[in-house]
Image (cartoon, rainbow, N blue to C red):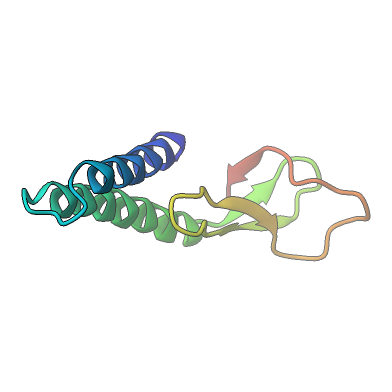
Length: 96
């Protein structure tokens, strides 16, 4: 997931740099960079949707957790699916 997030961020940086070099996109550089960025975002979203279908369990409290999708290039994270004890942070997660 970290590698996909880094790929998406790098791809967006390339889009911004392409805009600086060729603001009117006469060379097609910006369009190509945007396609690369969209592919990175699409791949990340696909993986996160699959992670959302996996039943996970917190190793600290043995409660169920679920995967919360990240927005854009930001990575998703695990969150308690059931009310957690006060002050609890989701620990290491295992597949059930």
